[in-house]
Length: 108
Image (cartoon, rainbow, N blue to C red; front, side):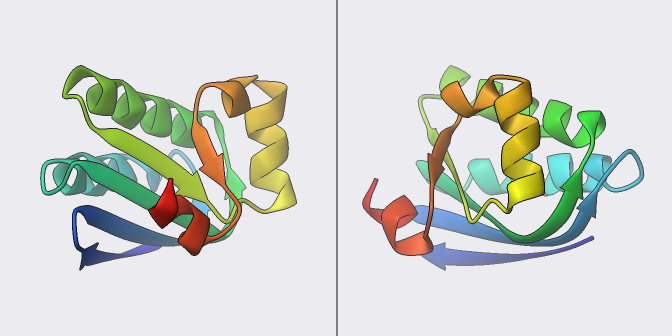
């Protein structure tokens, strides 16, 4: 898994590529929590993520919880079918703010 961070106005964008699993989710959690401190809105690009397991979902939930606790926003976009299905099965698609494109995520 690789991540790249971009700053845009009042938003931090984190591009994620690869699988999010037990081996990579701690690094993702750390990156997202650090990025959350930089701006009022954190946008996470999951377009290049092929797979996410329960530890990856737990990391995303932890970041969402921190965002809510600090009055910030977390927006996910670019979910492929596999990632979308996992969020739908766990009903987290109703909890997370999810957009199709980066443009939609930035306008949200």
